[in-house]
Length: 573
Image 1: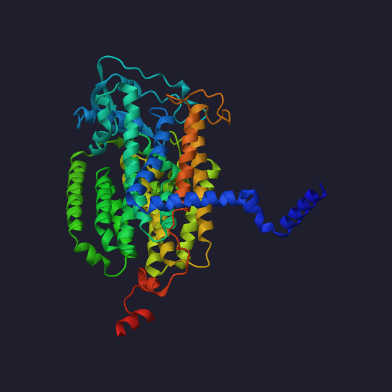
Image 2 (image 1 turned 90 degrees about the vertical axis):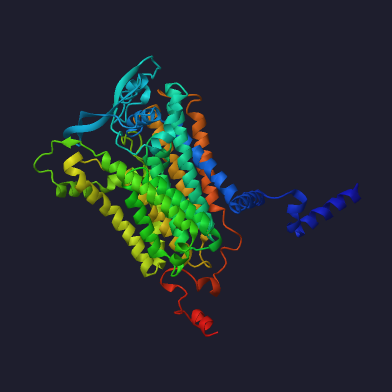
């Protein structure tokens, strides 16, 4: 017995003297478990990002899950102008591309007038759709349970839509389910098709971002561009959704094409830019302006000599021809379908007064770009505004701190455009249609700000001595929390109203099929996966200091044109 006790004492003293043996003998600590889990997740993220096809599929799945969550938790007709766009889609699917012009009374901003709408012949459920949202629209305290149910009825009716002058391409793409399925089910499928189109475009933008050396930083720019308002519009029937998604794709492809050139990726990037351009042009006439702005600032950021290589490539001319044909078709359509709406504007309502009022509404438009849900009657929560603005401002300030002259001009030019474009557009339209501008109209252009700033940070910020991993984790976590808070806030507005229970229980209105609880879990998992994709997708060794050979060929004013010592040495050799 004494011998056994002595052995136990020897073992205990040996353990105390060798604390390093505790992990091997007694298992890993919780900290080690956490580190192992992070390593495993990072390994998965790196493997996904290393293959463009896998990355596109994963990004599409995440974005579609987020967009579809909006599709199935928003009442039918519960998004801006959605009834008019659903009616337009149903009519185009039935071959009614041009309807009969009908002048209907309308009031916008307290100014009365007549809208030039299009009359079409559709099943009677579309007649009910036009009125189903009036009991809760613009009344954020009222949940959607007051809306009358949509029921399939026999026969057809004459209905009108304010979207009758819009280019029919988008409506044909989403409207065909109305020919195969009964009313309400077809409306939800229309939404899901629109969500899939938008998710595919933004997933392609993620692939373009992942082709940079530091993937996390460039992908962060794309994710910051896809605001909660963007995802909300992706999930409903409204051409603003694909317009914003195409804007994200155009900016990401153009900046990568000119600022981070790679001959092996040239054809793919030109194709992405061409696809985004065709979609952007085919939505509204403003698409040509958004495309021109993105290309102009990308050229301002581009490396010297890159444009010539791009213009000599066959894919550039092929996609340029496709984009040119799309532009001609869009311009012909727009010129042959003018807006004949009129308003009874007061004598003191002038283009200058409209511009002043638009300038005063600048903060409202900013909120609408980040997330103003429902019929623009549900303000975003403070967490969504503060966190999203914090990430955007951080990217802008970091870019301006390290940017060179042309890059600084590009950032300032985009900022000026975000302020000036609404002033000019509203002043030009004021005396014809009144004050109709909304923040989401500017998103196809404004999405370029975080994408460009992330690209400048990628090229200019030092790679050594900077807490990149911590910055990416904080930014991705902030965007995920902001996005999730916006979704919960919009869901609460629809289910119980803004004055109802904070915990959404009991819910007065509930999404179809499975209720609201599963979609909270789906959306939470989606934003978490997107955040992890941002934070953990970098290649190994991207935090190491940048060597001379990499820094010599960077874009902007410091391009390798013989002005640097290394370039001069190369030329002399």
